[in-house]
Length: 501
Image (cartoon, rainbow, N blue to C red; front, top):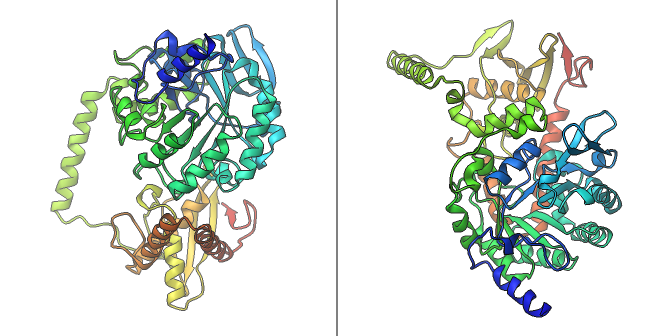
């Protein structure tokens, strides 16, 4: 009978059963909706979650695929177009760009994910209704920590506003016929995370994906499987574990390991699938014909291929031996230069400006730490006026170069940067290195500023205090505002702090 069938399906969906891809698990539920239990899922990824990548993941064995996160405001302006040439359904913006493309092949297994700008439930519903007949489910991203999401009140910015979360999800659940899910990041404590997920469950969502890192954490930080397990044990809806790429999941066999470690119903893969889509397939690789078949943007195709090849890109061009030969030559020359006493470039004074060939590399610094902050902190301690930055833009390639004035001296990098922010950071680096001051680089001896940030992080993680996090945000904002106020206006041609050459 119906009750017996329902109980049998629930038993099969329990986490302790292995991940299977049999017909029972790919069936829809009695309500005609997608089942999210015991699934291996392609996570939403900006620029990567396009139709060819989604189809490739399905070919390799993914059960469900998420599209890249799309902003509701842009999607609300789109028109649905049936593309007879490609046999796809396209959602086309007023400027004729295809914002979202799908096809019949993935219709029963693709989840449309959006970020809700300004947390507007009605606009989210408008977008969901626009796409619902062409997708299997609709998801709301509440976990993206990137600035372009959070500054508009989207992504992980919603985690601190459960009332808005409830309003958005409840509106979607009541307003469309397809399942609604959401994706979050964990909060500073297990208790807060579980309480939030319980509130989300009450809205009627079909499943919830939990990225096992806080919004302040990045891929290099360990994934918190204990948080995901606590969530899975506290709710009755399927919990999808996310965040195990590289640290836990490197091969197909590791997927089950992550599922067991997190106690989740299903597993969602992002970076490891980006690097190696065959992680979904035990038997190995398949071809990459979908990009051609569905007329994918060539720049996006190149980007995806580069992400897959990573440090093996030389093999794709048949240059493996040449690469190894050149690499060996460079390593040999580097060793020779070091033996012969080759030293890093020293600062020199040119036209009353101290210059060095310095480039700012963001990956070499911890989150929330930068040379500009170190220079500002040092200026405060020395009771000096705050640093003043002048930025110039070169017209032929639109690159930037900054000069910073500190204690009546000027410092500048001889290297031009692609952004004004990086140019200012490079100028700050020249000053710090000339004065032989710490700059906050990863692996550098801990400074007062870095230690203060770590103490704030530990305090926030220990007590989950919203007030502590608020003070931290206010502190960071005030520092950034001071740095900005200390930037000298040159002439405003390319912005208030920039001049053109």
